[in-house]
Amino acid sequence: MNLPAPVSATTAIILAVLFVKLAFAVIKKRQVHKVVLGTGQHPDLEAAIRAHGNFAEYVPLSLLLIVFAEINHSFASLALGVVANVVPLVAASMSAPRG
Image (tube, rainbow, N blue to C red):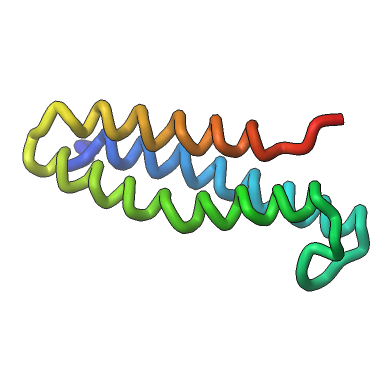
């Protein structure tokens, strides 16, 4: 099968897996702290929620930009694909609580 936008499709798949991983991190911390809504004043839960929220806010725009660049046969699509994959990974690892 020939994908019309292989960089975009591959990037979307990788980011979808990361999105689910971040969601499960929030769920796990909510279960540990027994918090249903909000953060319950737990910094590690707040960090996990913000990592997931920031990801949900910024990744769709980056994917859209990758699709536009790729449709226009721009070399920038590769660069955007790399950035869209690396930045959320770095941000997620930096916001993960230590310890």
